[in-house]
Figure (cartoon, rainbow, N blue to C red):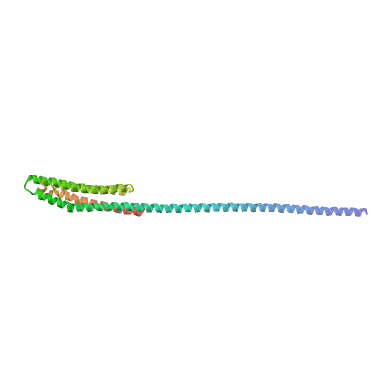
Length: 244
């Protein structure tokens, strides 16, 4: 009987040990599972947070790119408008200058072809008279009329020079140099014409009219210089307009 009780107790103890071992094993397995689960969950959370950060960075980059693109478009548009304004402004100034220059050359021609012819006719009618006083009066009148012509030409030339000064404010060094060359050529031609007209009122000229030949030769040279300078200036201005 005692043996049976002892066996029963041992069996109960064995069962308890088995149960304890099972519980311990389950707890250990559960602990391992929970640890692994928490690690995985932590990784997933970190991945989610990283994804959020990456998405935020991506949106920042996209927003920055859009802002920069809009700014570039804005600057490009402003640059186009600015270049358009510069082109129109320069074109208007260049056109006005050449219009005044053409008008100046036209008046030079009309003055010498029309006004000077009448001045010379009046001068000859008095100079060919016998009396010295009449000749002297004709010379004085001729010189006064010639000076009036020169003054009129200078007035017209001042308009051209005034426009030149406006162009120099926006001109390149190439245009500036060509303006200087044209100015020198026009001045040489004007001075030579004035001197030739003065010589034509002298007794030396009426004694030997060939003395004005050197002036005529110089005028031809100066005329070519004016024309060449004018053409070179026009081509340079066209080139600079196309570069805007």
